[in-house]
Image 1 (spheres, one colour):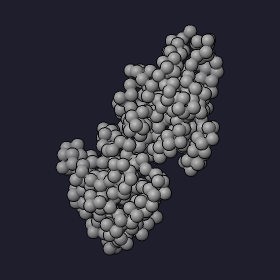
Image 2 (tube, rainbow, N blue to C red):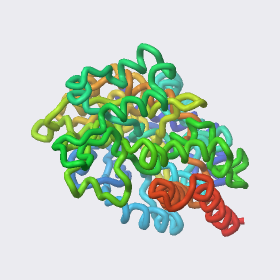
Image 3 (cartoon, one colour):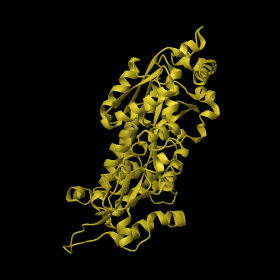
Image 4 (cartoon, one colour):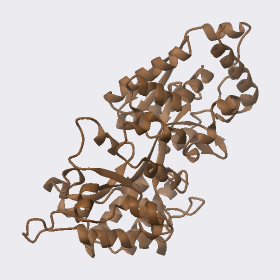
Length: 456
């Protein structure tokens, strides 16, 4: 009998003994061997694995499943990749009906929803059974998986939302790069004041027609808006997530800073301009800085998709509370309805591992272009450094370190509605000049308090 099979069998017995109470609470039978010992491991087992994504992600998941099976004979993984909208509709229904795949990925909002519904099992004892072999300390973003100190997931992918800047435009202007300012002076060099000063120098009328056609900042959505509010010392909720606090003086200061970029300093195009439709966007070289994510923007480095200029990442500039960076994880959970909890967990361990990145890379799978590092050790791996060699990889890592709090997404009722509808709409109203920063913040709180009341 192989060492791999014996090891899994041993882990089953260890996990069964330490998780019986927790699994029973989730109506999941503890994983045990019945009489046949390792013979049970020899039976063909198929576990379902689901994630949101596109058709381009299917070969990746199929390839990783084949690599996993080569290390775990008799265990097959059947991937299911669904578009974002379908995934967020179908998975909760499957969880409620007890038909969810053995293991599936959860972005932060779905993670909280699944946990509340009892749709996933605790993994702390499984992780402890692996011990040093799993090295949980190496895992990024523990907070997204933790509920009352208990681990309910391992990361499938993790991202930070930073700013990316056009290195070519900065060099032509003879100006230091934001990355250099950050590394050399930290918050003293890369902050709101520096951001505004650089913006005034690099926002230009290029053709002399009296209209601005190169802006310093393209703006960003709710992710960096919340990071900016937090950099000012503000927050959406109180610690108990029972009261809206985004109309506090600190939070309003962050909203006013964003509005002033448009209305006072004029270094960001106003929302009504529809700048992208005029060809004024980051990819055309007419915007010096814009929001970017370390999971999606990096796809511009792929062969045949490169931008016509050099670019890099930097953190959102520091406010008086320091640097804040949006970060989140798609956590892999084990379904409470799975009949193969141990095998499903074994897959989640592999899918989140450095081995998956490096073995996948050796077989032609480049996770660096779609899935941000799940472990800090991946930042040092050729599977990450070679595809993204043109970028300041330590800067990307800084985003993970400056994701405060962790989890960054508030575990509130309807968090994405709060952040990406209520907050972004009202910040937009401030950017338009339709409301003052205080008025926009007060209206945010009125709507957020209604959401909280709906769920009491």
